[in-house]
Length: 339
Image (cartoon, rainbow, N blue to C red; front, side):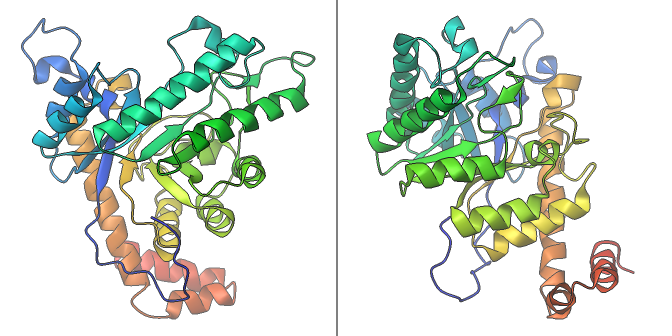
């Protein structure tokens, strides 16, 4: 997962791991559970996810998906043949979090959010993983003259630093997003996130790159990956797709296949070998979640084959070195379409 310290090309022979969003598997419940079964439990959703061919990992939300015994939950998921890749914090347990978790104007609420995150980190370790993803969507603002921006920033930095120091052996990954639920997120894009990480300057911090978030931050995914690789490291890779106006959560490659292939080439070049996570939303439109997950796996597997073809000789690197767009597009088209 770490960037290589040498100039040698990264090893690419390791099997690819695929992770998924657990809540997707509540979609079409009557197709898997008896009619009237009710809302499936996290472990029931994990059991359904385990039927998807090629899936190796799941991510769990905290505190939503962890019961009173995270160790038992981790064991149960491993018994299904899956690995817990990591946990993702959710700040919904207190309605006061709506106007901020780490940046809440009430010191007591800020403390509650930080302490909740520390418990989540402890739960991750008990469940058998060492990755906590922080999506701080509640930390931001909605109106001019609503916030003291310098104080918001200081509170955010202090909060992330404190939770990162809680367990230095647990990786803390920041997942940025331009907005939602706040109109403006405090960490809306790659550059701002990297600025925060540089200020905190702790070795267990990194970035989660979410493809749809990058698109509607008006960023180029592979360029963002290269920047993160230069200034930090990618700890999470969330693939999906969309129309660059919101977090659509469409299947991988549905709208931006060329940019997805370019991203996969870049992260492979930079040495990322963590699970490829599907942050897609089959439940929003009632798709079969198992079939949707398997389609994502097949798409990414085929795209990685395209990357292998492109990297089979130096033609693409030579064209890129010349910034020869015609030559590079011809090579990509042939690798994708065969002619």
